[in-house]
Length: 94
Image 1 (cartoon, rainbow, N blue to C red):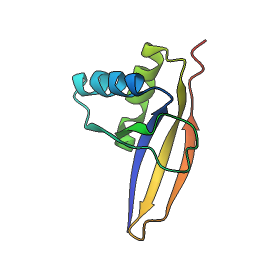
Image 2 (cartoon, one colour; image 1 turned 120 degrees about the vertical axis):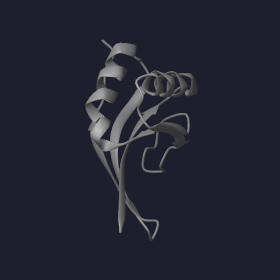
Image 3 (cartoon, rainbow, N blue to C red; image 1 turned 180 degrees about the vertical axis):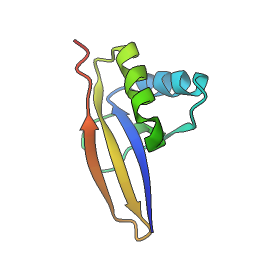
Image 4 (cartoon, rainbow, N blue to C red; image 1 turned 60 degrees about the vertical axis):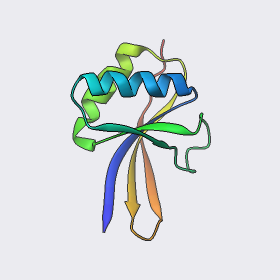
């Protein structure tokens, strides 16, 4: 059995918390989690979201215009602890 969800990883904890807050204000089910090891860069925290909310997350990221986004990823986590991370894009901030 696999669990599938999305994450937005940043280099700044402040940006993680700002995005989480913005998404919660939109009524989305989100949380802050430890960034998976496969994402080598970052502050160690990411915003976790449901994949059906991907476009809303992308719009919220674009509205914040962050300069420290590592990327947006889909996580396919298996019960055995092994998982697959798929990049879904990033935002350059320019």
